[in-house]
Each structure stands twice: as C-alpha cells, then as structure tokens.
Length: 93
Image 1 (cartoon, helix red, strand yellow):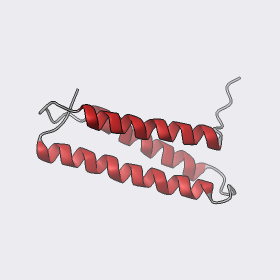
Image 2: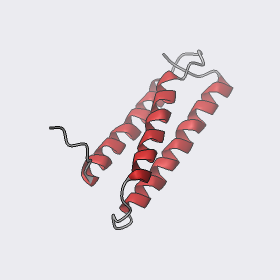
Image 3: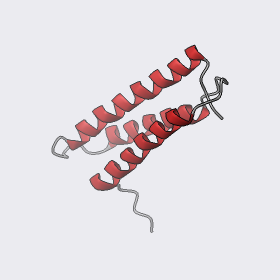
Image 4: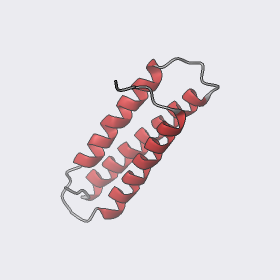
C-alpha cells in the first residue's frame, strides 16, 4: 500500500527540486512566445502544496509554518516570473 505521508526530508528534497527546475526553466527561455505553460503548472503545484501543508497537523516544531512561508514565497516569485515574461514577450513551450 502506498503511504501518502511525506517526510520533512522528502518535502525539502521535493521543494529543492522544484526550485531548481524553476531556475533551469528561467535560464532556458529563449522564445518570444508568451505561453507560460510550465510556469502555470508550477504555480498550480505550489498552490496544491500550500493547501496540503495547511491541512496537515500543526505540531511540527515550527517547520510546517516555515515550509508554508517558503511555498508562499515561491508562489510570489513564480507569479512575478510569469508577469515579467508576459510584459517582456518571454515564454517557452
């Protein structure tokens, strides 16, 4: 049976992978096309992660709250990237 609980280390690794992927995505953007599909999907995943963190139990020694704040920051930065690309003709496929 699949255990859906994620460990703190697993969450940190997943979050780090997502942040690295966003960095690589931004570095690889060369098209003048304004399509932001990858960033939009990343934004949706971040919102899902924040929802899951909110639904988890609160007694995590402050780590849950810190993770929620970091995910909120990632949401803001991802949205800022989408807005920047939209304003400056950036994008990708």
